[in-house]
Image (cartoon, rainbow, N blue to C red):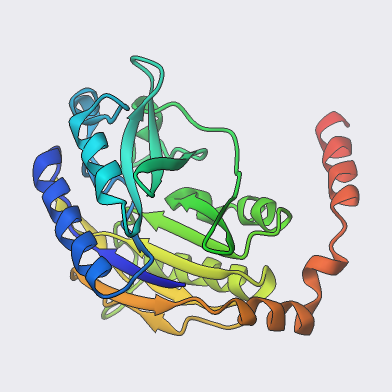
Length: 278
């Protein structure tokens, strides 16, 4: 499976400009033979939406929604957008389009609401992590802060998910040395946990650019099953790269580690019930 990672810098609140940016990248990826292109969290709207969420949310009746469905003929598209469902209720959503229709929605579960983050004031949280089948793979989606809770990729691991598409709007914070930001290293560390211990193809797609003085760090990457990060986009700058997903790597990693075979979900469930009720 050939996947293009589009590390872009969206324009805050400008759906038309962002759609044009998506369309250009989609057409180029399709011409180069990619089966899927992945954009960052809230790539269609920008991040610091606040009251703009009412004007930028997608619904099935929105013209850009119809345009995206048409654009997904010939290549699958994963992008981020505010999703309105039902009327007046908004989710921070990852939307997967394929073959002319919306195939899957993941609604962000963990909404940060501290410091510079105000997501819980804008969005309703989701409450599920459900994978789906595509191109012979079982795909799971994670949105930004969800990545930092190990139970979330574990839930996908227990559903035999072999590809994780993790999309983000991560600022760069916590300078340790020149060009080394603590916040960006967090994503790399969690990605390698998933690739090595959960035997998943792990793609992390972050945005770049600035909004209201906040800089977003880029640094998108791919880590194959059983391995550390093998391909990486630069920090800070827009970048497009393509990776090839080999299903053989999942099998080889599982044979080497046997983590899925030896996991004990019944024990985990039993212990969670005890912890919650004691």
